[in-house]
Amino acid sequence: MTNWPQDYSGAWTLSRPVARSGVGLHSGRDAEVVLRPSDRPGIHLSFSGDPRPAIRLRPDQVRDSSLCTTLELGHRRVATVEHLLAALAGCGLSHVEIQLSGNEVPLLDGSAQDWVEAIAEAGMTPAGSPRPQQAPLQQPLVRSRGSSVITATPAERFSLVGVIDFPQAAIGRQQLAIELTPDRFVSEIAPARTFGFRDQVEQLRAAGLIQGGALDNALVCDGDGWLNPPLRFPDEPVRHKILDLIGDLALVGFPQAQVLVYRGSHGLHTELAAALQDASLTPAL
Picture (cartoon, rainbow, N blue to C red):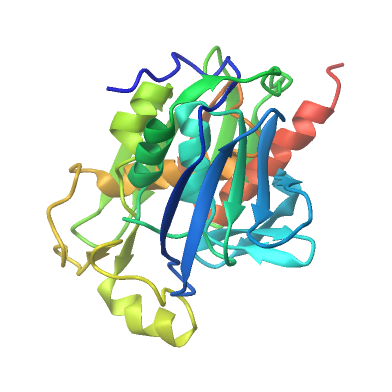
């Protein structure tokens, strides 16, 4: 069993490089990711075969895109980064370089579990420079889109509350609260897979999306049941929504706050990340 860090206060990198390859959810194209140790704080990304130096990933590079989180890195875009970023941040890594072939991170099994296993395979070691620090949140932040809302409230430790509400009986209303640690992320959040709906599959494919989606990398809901049971948790959908949120907050860092999201989306998560970034740059009065 891997000894994960106790919390998110330390600075950690990988002990050695590790690679994973697979198909992209939306592009349907094969891609490979190599995760490498780094002595630079933060998460950096480079492209295979591109001599340009790795780019440090920041919240302001995130673009609101349909059904995934996309980064705009100068001349290139990188899609579906959220599960990988969630695994890196959730396991406690603070110094790491991603080398990517292609323009979409592979989906693997639709969760963060395979990325966690890759990190465990590589091992973690203390980094040579401190973890990037975030200024404490001074006051609550609230962002909303229609009936969806997300809030961050100052707290002693980072915790998450996720609430989802779907008309499909197989999902319905689910909620989960968790005070996040690397151990809890690995056991309670990382295995939760992405999910979709049978009646939307053809429409999304016609729009050029989910070209790589399949029953072995996404749960598919058919109203009252699932086309590919069993679920890994009775409430796997809300756990996956929290996984997405962790990935979308990874680039700004985990705030010393309770984050609550009702009917979240990548766009809403991104708005909160931007607000947290602005708050950390604003000196307290």
